[in-house]
Length: 503
Ligand code: NAI
Ligand code: MG
Image (cartoon, rainbow, N blue to C red; front, side, top):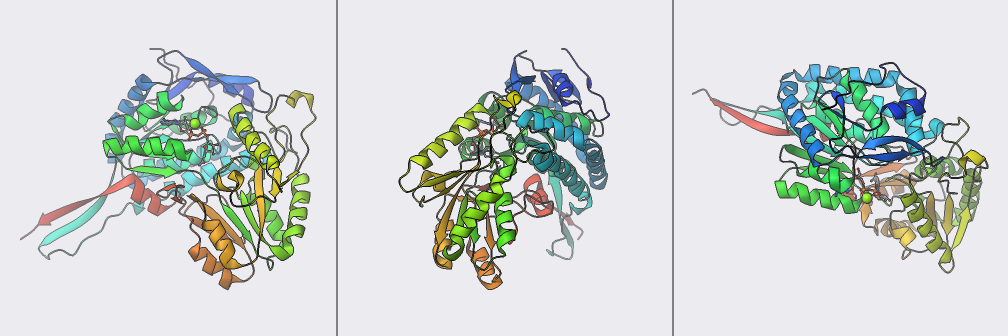
């Protein structure tokens, strides 16, 4: 078999186009780059220009098998390393990733169309932070002593599950991968990741960089399509834990396959996150908060995007006008340009899907579509998947735009008159991922925070995932939590009971 050990330099390389070429057509398995066994590759496209920037190996069940066998071989030895030492190695990976922050940011901007300044650089920084955080938790893999009988020593120990199969999406691929790989490794598991077909290169480079620190086989990554490469990974008999982030539809398929083998599964799925704005809020801060809540700098491609905004009637018109003004001021353009706030939609398919929602909204009687921000006029970007952010008013709870995840720069603002009414509207959703409340009346705020059906509720802020704070949804938004110590213990270890009779 052809074997390509590290064709890329260990030093950061800021030429993202050259790096994309070097990473082309490869998986990373057992501590080295390998081409896909089928020899088939697919194109990786820069959505800002439509240019093909590289190729990704089209993984299938054979590649999956090779990766899982390597991961299983590596796992016994990895688990035998003292937990704190494993953590130290993962923290060392964080330092390497931090040194490569700019390189990773440029590469992810190139392959996903996410603006360098507002999104890509931020994501690359958070990724290093997540590895650093989990790297410090090795010695927290503690068990308990259980009061059973004075003559019987009864203890529990935390043991790893084995090989973890992780499937990730394209919207924040580095971060969503880190939330799985970091705790899985620290807990003594080894990992095989299946990357998203739209964003396979930057995560591949992260895997290589981490493999310069980790023993071979601990962290492997494959590119490929869902049914051909993701499904065999989930189904592989040696994969003892499945963790998935993506759509509800695919999440259900993955959960069924995991149930067939009786292995635990963590699911981070979609959202339709409400933002509730009371008239007594700090107005300017809340308008700015609406922009970050809606993740406009990520083109709204976020499961926590505030795609339903409820504003108390006395300030409704003023809020809509100010929000329009603020979104208008955002600069849409070349993702690699420092001036750019808003980049592109990820793919033709997503572009069409979001456009269909916008068209449906515009065709709804009584609806107003406020299109903000100007499309870039640079001829080099004329094939780019740029889409003007849209603020809808005049749609009600029956609209598909209020009920379904759009995953684009589209939000719907609706007026409300009292707290009970808005709580009922917010909870009237299939989803339950995140919510935010904006008010200076903390009695009302805290009361609603307790009664909102969501995994994460924030008052007067709407931050993205943070290390040490459990993150994960209820209802169709998912199963299980990520990002925290508890998440690592619950989802990447099992508790073994050991009893010693000393009578
Ligand atoms: P998807 O859920 O189909 O893809 C996510 C990952 O699952 C990808 O790596 C894909 O290859 C893999 N996959 C697909 N079919 C599979 C199968 N049968 N077995 C195992 N793995 C499989 O999401 P997609 O098609 O990229 O986007 C569709 C919609 O999903 C978006 O419009 C958005 O609404 C939602 N979405 C939500 C995300 C989130 O963060 N919660 C992330 C990405 C998409
Ligand atoms: Mg899909």
